[in-house]
Image 1 (spheres, helix red, strand yellow):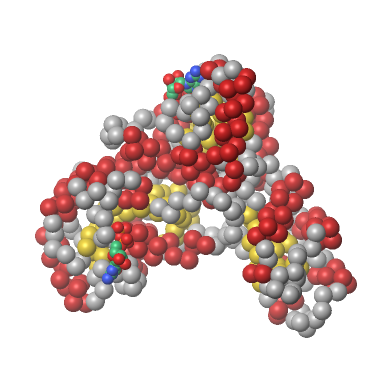
Image 2: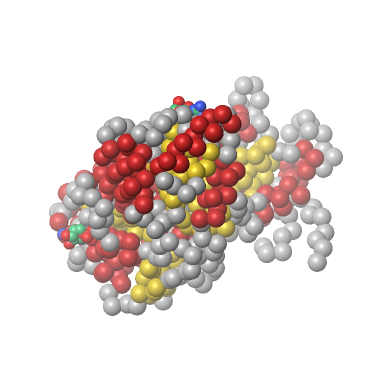
Length: 494
Ligand code: GDP
Ligand code: GDP
């Protein structure tokens, strides 16, 4: 079937951007391990590259540069710099490496072991390889800093360490990264982690939080004797076990409940348990629509909680902050705990906070009602017509302020993606828009479109002149012209 040219080509292009032809979502975690200074973070940046700064989203999110989404040969995965996760990995002692590798072996699907091509093998390298031999998971060995053919030849000496294959890479200059990406893609599963979410499908929930926050208690309470789904997809190294529950006629899929019940056994050290809980959170968030951040209200919300929330916000997931163990608190203490949570997570002030006791069952109905509303917001698709009526209103009551003598103009808005929602505003001079104004638009979108608990992501794009017909690019702004541009395009699915 041939399609007629769209009357508003730019809008059509934006609406379909990021559509169904995206990369295969494998849900896999690829961890980079290696001694300090071998170039792990350089490699991380090389593999993640341009994808880091794509979407302008919530300001003030606690950012963690040690994990990011990456795509290799059409397969999407999460890349983790395990060294960065471990606060003591700069410790040149072997223990630092052991912790990293334990974490990677226990939590990742594919491991990249980075060695230094410019140095002869040292005892720590032998120890590293010995540790990695214990795992059945795919391990990709690279010799980094192989900046030239001569260095590549020298690095071949590292084969003495006993690996079958060593990829020569220069993370700094990009040499050898194509071979590395091919190896990563080969090690990743060939199937998508999940079916796409459809209107009637269960609401997908990730329960995340620090150790002992009460995640397993919550799962046990809501799952009770319900059946457990075993999802075994061929080709994956770690098959998640989900739990399906039904409440008030709505079904909910609790993601990877086996992973929650499993207590990290890799080491007794707190930071590894903490690291494992962060990786577990990343893994299950990848598959979730709504993330429940379980916090121990009796202990008080901490920076670590805020960091995990930041991971969810970065991914555009719907979030509900759950203050658990309220049975331990009197009214005043609960009020204080709630205030503390609000302060710690001020960057996500829009996220609903729900008070529960997983032990007594108090607050469960309120929790699931909130999750349902957040999931609705997450799945919402706002017709372009409605969106632009709202937008015209915003422009009329509060147009962008002048900046450097000129006021940037906003032409129209579309919802480029749902689940999670992403809006695109086409503007002249978007770089001149002030952060405060962008925040205003974001807040208006949230309140007018009732996007409860969902990070509202708005991307500002420079108008592409040729898409806007024969109009002179520098024609003065007139209301008539503006009106014309915001006409909704004809869409088959509106
Ligand atoms: P990490 O401690 O393993 O994360 O290592 P970094 O990524 O911080 O890199 C350590 C140093 O090695 C930095 O000065 C990098 O610029 C340098 N480096 C990283 N990759 C390469 C490379 O491919 N070639 C060269 N010549 N230097 C590199
Ligand atoms: P997880 O590590 O996040 O899965 O936490 P658990 O569910 O294992 O809970 C950790 C500890 O907190 C256990 O001793 C639970 O009994 C306790 N706990 C969990 N929820 C509650 C609650 O609502 N009230 C109280 N008083 N204790 C709780």
